[in-house]
Length: 84
Image (cartoon, rainbow, N blue to C red; front, side, top):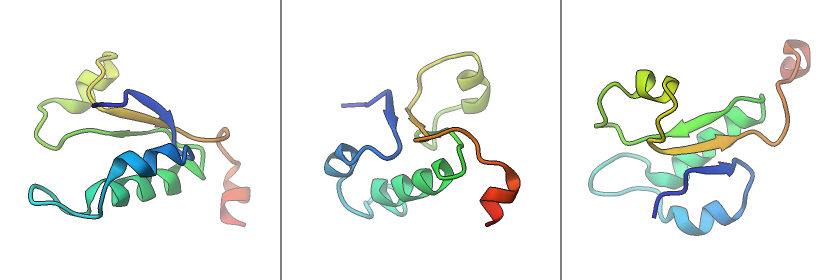
């Protein structure tokens, strides 16, 4: 079942993410979650969407729910703090 929204640091996501690879793609959901969590540390939102969906960016911008929106645990950090 698709999870539409969650916080990137939610440990419950690990339980539903499964393994690290599959027959249809590379890396699996665990790898995608790891990347989303890395982005979240800088305050970025991430959307995990299927790679075969057409016009993903335009449709997301229009507000369509296509995948899972992962929100950061805190707001954007200043560039200097990210560097440190």
